[in-house]
Each structure stands twice: as C-alpha cells, then as structure tokens.
Image 1 (cartoon, rainbow, N blue to C red):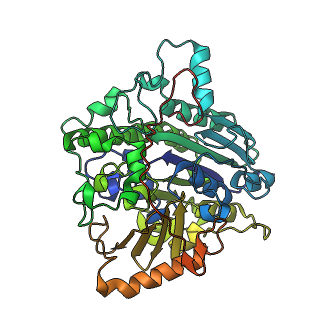
Image 2: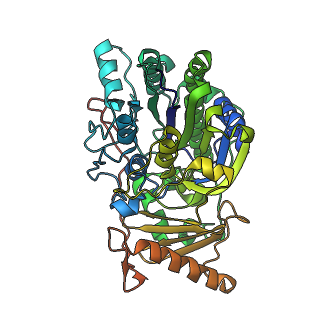
Length: 477
C-alpha cells in the first residue's frame, strides 16, 4: 500500500533579505523562479528571523523554538537538537525519508540531529579535491563577511550553488519511492563573499541598483547609536566604501540571488516533469537578511528590516488545500519557528507535549484561522526586539539606545519615533510586552521587571571572516 502523505521540500538561502524578489516589488532583480513560486503559492510578506544570524536561525528551524528560549542567540555555541523533537527527527520517526543537502552550520558539523543522511558544504570541497579540478573555489582571497564584490573562480557547472542543486536532484532520482520524502535544500548564497559567476554579474550590466536607505536617525554615521552599528563595524569594511562601490556590492549580491534562482530552475523542472508538484509542500525562505548599506551598515544581527525581515513563499499541493489562494499574499507575522509546525501538520504528525514549540501552522495562518499577536527576538548579548500592531520596538542593551518604527507607514525605518512624545505610551506598552516575554529566557535579560542594560564600549576587533581555501569548513560559502 503506497504512502500518500505529502512530500516536503524546504529551500533556504543564507542572508537573503526580504526585498529581493522581482514579483514583490523590486524591478532591479531577476528572480523568475521565485516569481513562479509566488504566483503558484502564497507569499508571506511579514516573515522574520527572531535571531538574525546563521546558527540561531537554523536552531529555530530545526527545533521550532525561539532562539532566546534556547540560549542560542549567537554563532559558535554547541548546537545539539534533540532528534526526538527536531524537524527531521519527527519526520524520520514518522516514516519519511529525510535528507539535508547544503549549508547546515551545525556544531559539531556532522551531527545529524535526526536526518537519515546529510551532505554538507565540506562534501562539496572534498568532491572538488577528489575530482582534481584545477580551478579552486573562492580563489580570490575575500573572507566570509567582507562586502567588496568578486567574481567566482570556478565555472558555474562547478559552483557550490550548482552542486547543491545537482545533489538534491540526485536524491529525488534515487530516493525510496515507497516513502514520502523530506528534503532540505540549503544554499549558502547570497551570503558573502559576493562572488557570482561572471554571467550573472553581466546580466546586471546597465541595471541601476537601488540606493541604500537612510533615516532621520541615520543620515550620517555619527548620528547612529554606535551600538546598533557595532556588528557592521566589526564584520564589514563598509565605512571605507563609496556610494558607487556599495552599488557594485549590491550588484554582486543580486547576481548571487539570481544564480540561486536560475539554478533552482533545474530542481523545479525535474519536479514538474516527474509529477512531484502535485504532492509536495514547498517552502522557500532564508535564515536572515543583509543590511547591504542601509543606514550606513552591512552584515546582520540587529533587527532592522534588511537584517531580520526575510522572504517566505509556500507552495501547497491540492491535497493540502489553499489552492484557491494561489498567487495571494498573507500579511500576518510569521517566523522560522513556524516551519516545523507546518510540516508536522501536513504530515499528520501530532507534536509532543514534552517539547515547547513556538510555531504556528502556516496553512492556518494563510487561511485566517490562526495568527501571531506579536514576535519577540534577541540576538547576541546586544539586541532585543518586539513586533506588534505594525510597530517595531528595537533596543540595544549595550548602552540602552532605542528605535521605534511604524512599519505600516514607514516600511524602511526612516523615522525613529522613540523620542517622540506622541508615541511614548506605545513605546512603553511594547517595551513592557517584550520584557514579559524575555523574563523567562535562559539568559538574564530581565532583572526586577526591567531590562538589564550594560555599559557600551566600542568593540574595535575586526573580523572579516578570513578563510583559507585549503581547509574549508561547513561555513565556507
């Protein structure tokens, strides 16, 4: 008897900001296949990472728990997700064939966390070495955080992006067809270095790049509360780049997005040709964004829109309903914790009461049967945020600087309302609601009912993410 439960395909990129899909209002970028997923599925316009750096976001995807509740709010910490409750673990236990391909960024890197099988970035570099290709990936000397653009040093057919797609298609071709599958196809781009293959750089010749956004609080670097741009200063050299150089960095970043999109066309085409679309739930999203020069900042980690707001597209097969919503948009607040709840629901799995899941079922959210009133996030020993009623309150506990934005009227955060007396009550309400959520966090963010604010001393340590091509790791992009 065949198993008719839906297949599940999770597609993630690394460091892709929310406004990098042509169909969603960006006329400067080429994204034909993301446009297609949006036209045939549902676009969640308010999707966020509750801790916008790599490892915490991936821990949230895997566990369905907000990062601050797990004490995983920064990169580098040992990350072991209990496979009894993890996304791949519950699907494997339920009889799904589970495979991860691409960037996982687990610690330790080979910890399967419930997957039956994984192929990670290390395996691409091992494959390139074994094949004896004379070209070396990333043979340009740029690190993993620098904003300066480069051109890929391997042809597209040997790129990491193509390898991830090829290995994903190989899995679909050789899988056990008596079981439904869960495949996580995890791209490492457009994370820096921004080094697309030259053909993708060339398609942007003559296309104007949108300029970075500056607000009344960020017209000059001197006006920005220093703690908000500390991570940008530490990890990127954006303060040394001219406006024209930032446009070229954006061009290379857009080209990396397009390279992912175009190569994704191979995987989607295979699925169409083999009738897999009819019974596969597909979600496309990213672990966090990239500030790309907005407010004089690069990198991520704070909760500004470019950093924390991510794309999210969902294709539902007819068997899961919502076909009447194809091409529509949902404006409710959603987040990465919602993925595991959605997949479990689609697979008919009842989540265990022994684990605290923070996610919602995206199908119910899209149908109007469920909603999130607010979203709270924390990142590192630095930032807290709450989204509620169309407002975002953002505080840096190093120094206590505050930002408040009305996103309905100010989607790119150009007007800071934190010191506006007309919004004092709104700010107080949001801060109080945020403190209520954070008081039970693993870290001591709250003491005596108030946020713990720390002195701020500028971190002058520079970390451009240097790497050697000789010993690549699972975070070598």
